[in-house]
Amino acid sequence: MMRWKMPLVAVLGAVMSLLVAGTAHAAVGARAVHGNDWGEIRSVGSGSYNDYIIVCDGEADGRYVWAQYHLVSVFGGVSEYRSVYDLDGPNNNSCGIHDYRGTPYFARAIRVCEYEGGCSAWAYTGDPVLVSPTARTAKDVAS
Image (cartoon, rainbow, N blue to C red; front, side):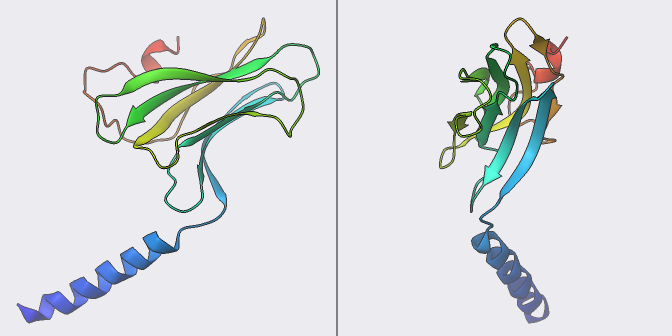
């Protein structure tokens, strides 16, 4: 019995050190693009996982943009669509942001829409569905 305890402790220690170390950069879970307008689901900083949503208007055409995203909870029960807006045009210092870091919520899908200009296709993070199997997904409403 003692023979398997030491390797198990070593493996668990290595996994924990990777989790604690984290990263300071942003990893993109999904990106949607509509012309020069774009939106992303990001993991920003240590302990973050697809919980930072950003949308940026990249066109000086006078039409605002927004991102629709599918928000879920790690505990299940929450599955809803929300929107974040960038109303001031192509000013990269002022994108629309929803920040769920430090909460049990994360995003699974995103698309970018432009006022009177349509929407991009849905982009998915690849996360497993953590809600009821009868809950609607982003693919159900994409068409």
